[in-house]
Length: 241
Image 1 (cartoon, rainbow, N blue to C red):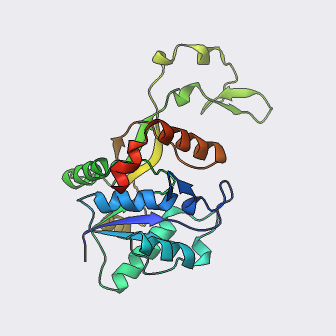
Image 2 (cartoon, rainbow, N blue to C red):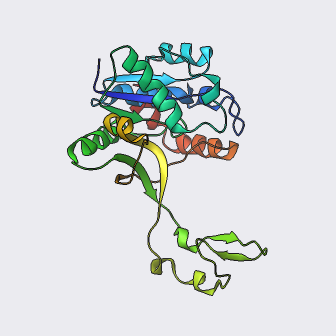
């Protein structure tokens, strides 16, 4: 039934951007972008949407994905973690004799992706011998080592340090190590590792570098994506032609 399953989480009830998974971007629901990219990726055998909404499930099926189950409310709230919905999906697939070897975790909140890059990620993870998972990241424009926390006493302090002396943080960015941000473009997970460890990523995660991408968490993020599409309207054709 497919060794590589793309799993797209799309719960209802988003607060930052209401109904963001079905909101139109470039004339298509946000969810449609991820489904279309997965359907064009040759390394993916099945595309499954995990949702707690009958409406979203029906939309997913109309868009060419599968939605064979509904996610329980207990693992669909704001505090739900990725492990819960992934294992819920794997348990359903296993119960029906369809458990895959790999899960490709695709977040609909990162809609602008190239199916060829998704294929590259799956191939790269399959070819590595010892990685526990693969996660997509892009280099941060400013090193995280230049960032601050607020101390218990109310002063700024360097991130990850107990020191409130900040002058060294003003050094040129080239003097700091590069840091990377997970971006939701594509994660590839080993089902055998998940079952063995009770974890989804583990301690030997392979980085997959992408260009900088926008994740939709706020209205300004959505506006940024709409601006990007206005500058590159052919992006719609590449996914939906």
